[in-house]
Length: 239
Ligand SMILES: O=C(O)CCCC[C@@H]1SC[C@@H]2NC(=O)N[C@@H]21
Image 1 (spheres, rainbow, N blue to C red):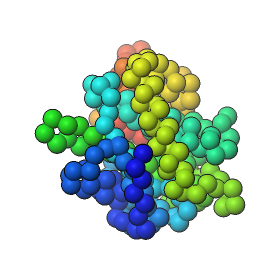
Image 2: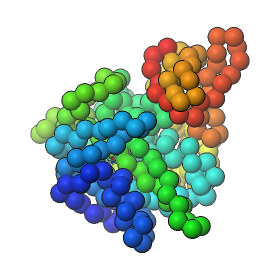
Image 3: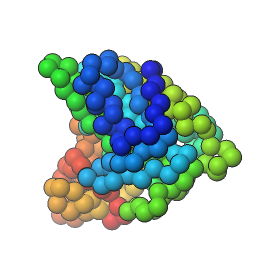
Image 4: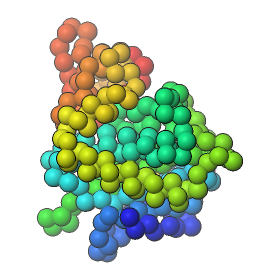
């Protein structure tokens, strides 16, 4: 995948969107050594200590993801896990925290901000990914950690290239095998599936049993009275 490596920028998501607007054709990756105004989900900011990975992948989604954009979040978290495993991260300890945080031994090591851009009939995804390769952020809502020590961490640009490969493979897998196969890969690695969780979201707070992921990529929550509720966005924590 074409990789534009910057020395510094505000937010790689904004840089990727700007280039799409200028007519650069996806797929491409914009990554940066220094990010000064990184954005997180739900309007939060994302800090970028030196040596961590920050990059945004502009991708043309296959039909399945155009129909079900919620699945892109699931697929992105799984791709981060695969890229980390490639560089020797401990496979057994890596999990996805719905919708797309990546945890190592229950601590957040990566966050993803997936955005959709449409221009006339064309749709592109900008999937912004921050990975704590060597340092956790200074302040974090959820306990955070780094994946590697400074001596064993991969080069950030090489990590971006590997992640690009894994994202393209995961998109092809999803298109060929369908939503159920993708969701079952996600569920095999999902933090607290089958256990009680709480979710704070724009739809209001809810708690219950994390029962399943529905075909749209939403959480299916079983409430205390036995009824079900689907949630499409929010922050999961222990119930
Ligand atoms: O956990 C989150 O809230 C999502 C964090 C996403 C951070 C990445 S870093 C690269 C890209 N550029 C941004 O401004 N945000 C994403």
